[in-house]
Image (cartoon, rainbow, N blue to C red; front, top):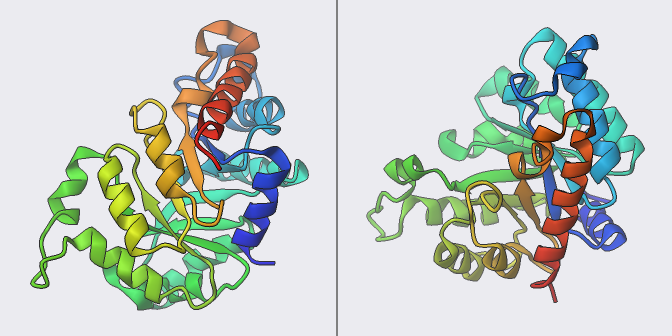
Length: 266
């Protein structure tokens, strides 16, 4: 089974399209967890214990793990999530050329899917795309204001750059393992992209703290019932003021988002 088949089964099992972003900012981890050798892993373990019944996937962002202790924490986190039967999407936004991108693609030996940056074209993504069992989410339309600096640029064909990225990703989907990252803050663009690429699942960030459109994220983010709506800080730090009981707040936030999104699922 490829990643999106496995994701479909996971979505059905937990009745959820929630992606829980595991971005353990050390400055926001509860003080008592800093007594552990790997505070980020200690934090993530408690978040996973509290939220796994509501999570379609976990999405750790590599930026929060890029140091020796961080990579150790990430490895423990991935193994623990898999032990709970939850797939892991590594938000790494990787891509490069030649040997470098082949090295990056080895990350797929540890996780189930990865985000990639299409700026350097297909050859920079080929080692990811050729892995038939792993998912590849191509950055297409991001939710940050600065995304417009490049993504909105109009090409000679009259289409904006992000629409060309979507079209290329559709062409690159030879192994049925490609999805798109499309932010939830501009629902009209979500709708347009869904019309353009009806079969590509979307990973939709921006619904939590950024206040994106949850209804549009579900209506246009899912393809054949498969897709993901991510919340990171809005879940994992929901119980930030609760001290040692912080994970309960994360559980409530994940359950609340699951119910909110399920209102719009068919």
